[in-house]
Image (tube, rainbow over all chains, first blue to last red):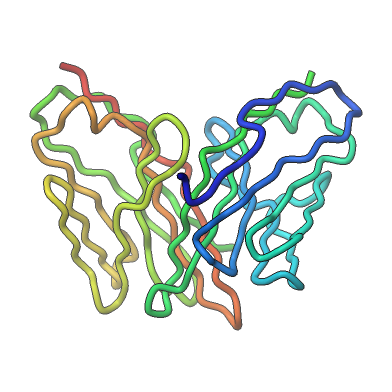
Amino acid sequence: DADVTQTPRNRITKTGKRIMLECSQTKGHDRMYWYRQDPGLGLRLIYYSFDVKDINKGEISDGYSVSRQAQAKFSLSLESAIPNQTALYFCATSDLLRGFETQYFGPGTRLLVL
Amino acid sequence: EDKVVQSPLSLVVHEGDTVTLNCSYEVTNFRSLLWYKQEKKAPTFLFMLTSSGIEKKSGRLSSILDKKELFSILNITATQTGDSAIYLCAVDLAGAGSYQLTFGKGTKLSVIP
């Protein structure tokens, strides 16, 4: 079984709809992240969480919210989806390997907002 | 503002060629630099380079870090079609209680038979 899973893997929705992307991990990591990837723009950080009670905004948090329900679960919500939120979304977890950050990515969710 | 720049953005080579991918960074409080390979979907971890580990090698892939000149290269020898992917460079920024990766835009490598 994959260590980091994301659901759904693909989603089509309409402008104005609320949607939630979910991430679960079995790696036992405290740190979890949400990124989006757009062609030509690379990976950009949306939100991150260092433990269950810790939530931090990343580079592009506007229009998104997150919930850290448990150490293993971190969900991303789009309250009112808009077309420019069409992208590939990745969840990642990390540990501190001898004090250095290494991130492990889920398989991604491809989101299309019409 | 911290910045990570990869070059070239895309590259097409023939099987058997050797390629060099570049990553330069302008960051404060550098901690480490990571290389990832992204094929169809999720990026997968390749190497981490730090002040105490400036050269890494795994099979046909190798990477070095030049902390003085602020860049890293990823070298792939005897390329195969399976090496076709986007290669991402990321820098770990040291800050008080902060561990985040700043990613470059990636280099798309296409290896043709």
